[in-house]
Length: 238
Image 1 (cartoon, rainbow, N blue to C red):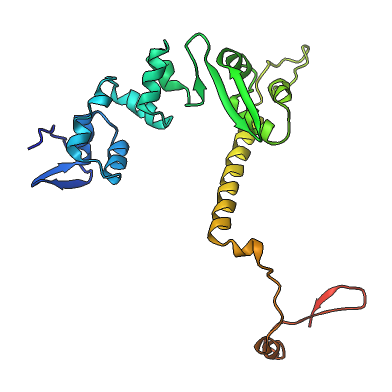
Image 2 (cartoon, rainbow, N blue to C red; image 1 turned 135 degrees about the vertical axis):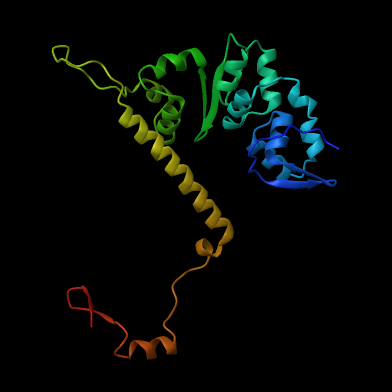
């Protein structure tokens, strides 16, 4: 029988495990994983005892908050361990996405967009972020046709007249718009790809069809809207 902590007011899903009723919250508390991670592992078919006794996970001794950060960034344990071995602090290892690689003295952001290899030192990105040029902004600009150099140098700040009683501010509205467009573009590409795979005939089979006898019959009925083209080429309802 598994030794699990008691969870007050536990409303998470209950599971029958070898005659013992256990909850998602109990498994999460005993293993150190987040509830969402436990749910994902159970869906993948991982045994509950294996989740609780995951020594590979416990080797890092991550806190619950650190586990949440790891899950939010979709980082693997091997990635975190590799970063720690390269001199990263645990906080930094959990802060950056998997696109950041290298030793602590030479961390580099790596990506590839439209066939263009993007490789930017992390220290340089930190300086660019001060003026609003983030890795997401650079990626979007390159995807829209800019060179890497242009993407890293085009300002996204509001120009301020020194005689105006204003302070220099980052144009966060532009940044938000860029990030929003990047998200929309990703969703659009996903939908187009899904449609292409599910209905390939839409791209390969002509979609123009001749009017059938039944269609001509319907068009002759007064209840069906019909159209005609006048002498000037305008389409009109009749």
